Image (cartoon, rainbow, N blue to C red; front, side, top):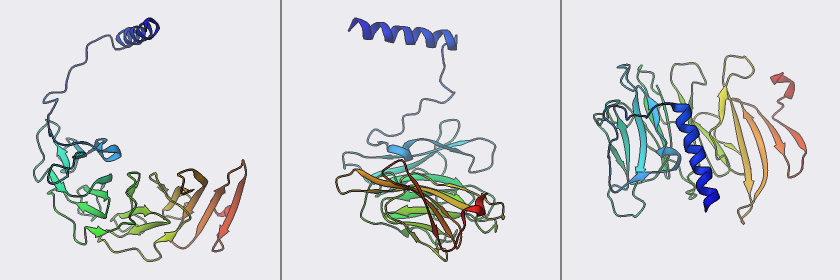
Length: 259
């Protein structure tokens, strides 16, 4: 016990010497929002975005009732920089929100809020309204909280597509909630993290780099892969259970295309 106490004291002393001053709360904070709900996993980590273009950032996050008593079960909060509620929020959901992204989905010049929920995908504007075409049903019966949502303009039309995944597939939806042509793409396993998206081959259009893995029924990870998706082609770098990298070429795509 003495050893642990001494280590803690040294760390605190070091921190004090680095900061050299006592931190103060930002004006208007702390804010007590809800006594029944608490931040949920990744979607409870605040997302910072200026959704009304007033040059002040809003704080976006999700909280859920873990005891199953409150109704609705969850709230999507948008808090102004001064600690007040943004008009139209919080917005209630009877699903658990798994991931949040922000971007100008419909191309109107204002940031929207895209959310991946347990059973659906939704996009909400700065007024708290659903964008046309949303929400859309998207569920595979697996309620693992690590299910991402990402945004990117693949066809350079000024509107953003939504990248989502569930067991054995990755899908891309257009800004209006319509499944994009050529999707979903089927994979062996799951994608548990947000993909990297960008124009890797300098052709003016984006590619998706997704880390995927298979899982045994026991919960042990079987094998992993890095998959790169284009509109019509895929290259997969299959990482086996050993220290061996096997390149799988699909649909005539050549590895040299990325060099």
